[in-house]
Length: 266
Image 1 (cartoon, rainbow, N blue to C red):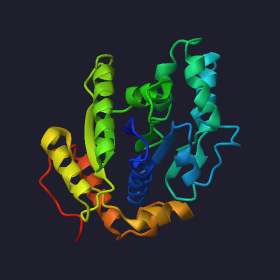
Image 2: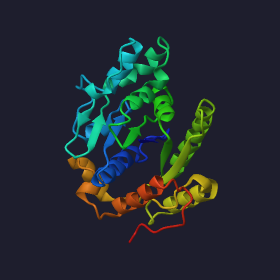
Image 3: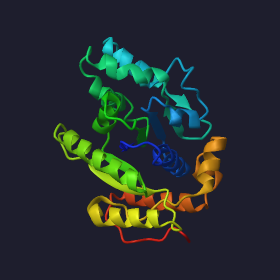
Image 4: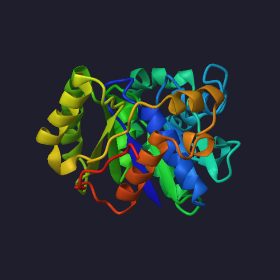
């Protein structure tokens, strides 16, 4: 079972869109996919038409069970989606309270790792949507994965957020038994703007070794897919963004982060 975490310490960079798009592509290939929403805002949960404000069974219950030293039973909290082979462990608003509770209990940083051990035979790939702030939830997301995907919007402020994320990764690396591989993914690229072009060039100059050499273009089909709650690869399989995500998935599955420059515009 592969586990990929999608994370950045800046919001609005295409994190949830990346999770859903990769999940849609993988499920279309016949893979058994689990999405885990660790963001208290619950955008991934909402995408699949579940309400984080009213859910009484969510990933929060697993942290609660761990803190109360109960046996972890993740399947009790996993929900099927409308899409074959694609399940979700949803978020609830209660996740926002975890950091305040973490000081009272030991071991909360490894809850998701323990959960995935119990699910190893049930899924081919797990995609974790991490919150954009450093805390017990992001630590769980980074500790549990074997590859980190960092979406970065091609604009100046997002590049500053990437610098913070790389520093956080450096801290996490010290506690892991093996280095965490990561891939930086340029998102929301608009070739009509100088800002996007300049930001993409900056990424290529500074992060060449870990940068996917493609990019995810701005695409209204992604917004439409979110509006109707259908993964873009299912709603618009031939859209520019989906074709780009397909290339990204191929690279991730082969663990190639140093790629030749490719065009995503047809």
